[in-house]
Every structure is written in C-alpha cells, then in structure tokens.
Length: 239
Image (cartoon, rainbow, N blue to C red; front, side, top):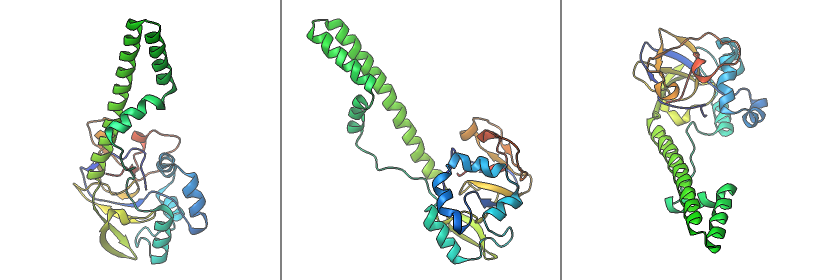
C-alpha cells in the first residue's frame, strides 16, 4: 500500500474507525493492482460513499475481513504495507552518474573540452563551473529528498489496531491488507492510507503534507468531482 504523499498525520481529536483504502475482489485483484496508481486510489475512493467502499473491498463494516484465505490472497497480490526503497549506491558513484545521466550536461562538458583545446581557457572554466554548480545543486536536492523518505519510514507506526472476523487485535502495520477495518485514537499515527467510514470530531495534523499549520477536519462523506490531496477530507494518509 502506498500513498499519494505519505507524510506525518497525528490525530488531534476523538477516535475513528476506518477501512484500508485499496483494491477489491479476487477476480479483479491482479488487473486492478497493475492498472491503478497510488495517487489515483485515494481520489477514487474519496469519490465513493463509505457503503460503496465497503462493498467494493468485500469487507464488513463491523467485523472486518472474516476469511484468512482472503487476507492471504490480498497480501500476495499487494505485498506488505510499507514504503519501498532501493538499496542506496555510494554517494561518490551517484554524484558521478549525475554528469552523464543528463544529455545537456554532457553537451556542456563537451563544449568546455573544446574551448580548452582551442585555448579559450576562460570559457572552459566558466562552463565547467556552471556545470559543477548545476550538478551539485541537483544532487543535493535529490539527496535531501531521499533523506526525507528515510525519515518518513521511521515515522510509520510499527503496530496497528484492527478488527478481523469480529475480533479486535493488534498486528504489525506491515501486515495490513486492503479492506482491513482499522481503529485509531488521539495521538496515534495512521498505519496506511485509509478511507474513513466512521469518525467522531476527527481532526488530523497534515502540516507536512499540505503545509497548513491547522489540523484538518475529517469527514466520512463522499466528495464529488476531482480534488487535490488536501481536499480529500474523507481520506487519512499513512503516517
């Protein structure tokens, strides 16, 4: 399970019950898993009523998923509920790669070499300096983005409270599957992108996602039409 932009989201009000936002029945799990993007999923379910969401995910709004085989199937299709990241290369290798990944940078380097060979030392130095500045700035920005993702992974809660087969239990957040009925309360972090189905005066701090300093009031009502992430008030985003 992924998110559109899964930043920190602390609850600042009363408890809530919700259903994990993702795909549906066995006969179409594979095709929909391959065709839907994470950004489209939250928009898709924001436009659905909670009743339609429960029906499409083939879950129960009171008892949750009641079939262990169904849980295993959903997990085999969608994988574990965690953010994926590639094994990082060494910083030096990644910095060197930035020089030949961009054709424009290669063109500028070629121009600098030609200028040097023709005796235009000042031009060669100017072009080389410009290339170094552009590459360094881009590399630093990319590195900071990766560091933010690593920090985000540390914010994701390890455990989640849910109801399966009518019983409330606590499981690893990575074990959540589409259709799980998840519970959270004041101070909890959100263990997955979820479509809210029941709430009581719920507000969530999404400042890292939207930039808004005030908590966002949440609702269970469906939202008509296309909306940006910060307007999907019936969706709670992971972490």
